[in-house]
Image (cartoon, rainbow, N blue to C red; front, side, top):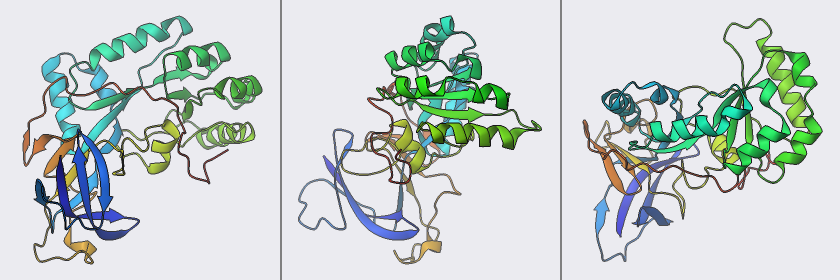
Length: 300
């Protein structure tokens, strides 16, 4: 058990001093100060802290060997990623289990924690596929859109009813440069909204996930935030100006720069310019239930 004392944390566009009590790889307590703590303490006054980032990392699945995988993963660690999302492709229902098995095998040596979803064509979005994905605890499906008519002809009411027991997040994907890209997304969103199905804008590769995405996918509050009960995944940034104060936002390094230290579940995996994480340390995360903690505006 140890205390991260007086770190500078960005919260809702304001900088605040926060102290975090870490035990067994999780955040046990968060407060503005912890003056009475008598045990191990790391004083971080003047050091900026941020939760570990969650990113889509499909290129990890394409690594030809362990060396290539390690190099690819290192680029994500450099960016402060502590949890990766992969979406292997499945074109037929009979492939679902095999595709999941291959993805798990590909990530067995991961230093980062990981979540496995699936990328499927719109034609596979049917109740039997949804049930199989629910059985495997797949929290999100990326749906490839090609036709507005095909979207409208889906058995939406049956899909919505099937999703009630385990509300998988359905995220659209449209080929870049498609002439009717905007129309496809609008029709998709209208259908999901009409049937109260959780969806989100198309994913951006290697971009940190928003709080809304974390909530809808079921990763919140375990990942991407630092709250009581969260995994102790955090990033430390050296200040640009050692004389800066908590009130001076410009004096600290945040999203546009790479962190000096990356920590997953209390273990350092990057220190300064060195990647020190152990292969296989990463966990496969099975989501109990997507959308457990939704914001009011996202609740349907």
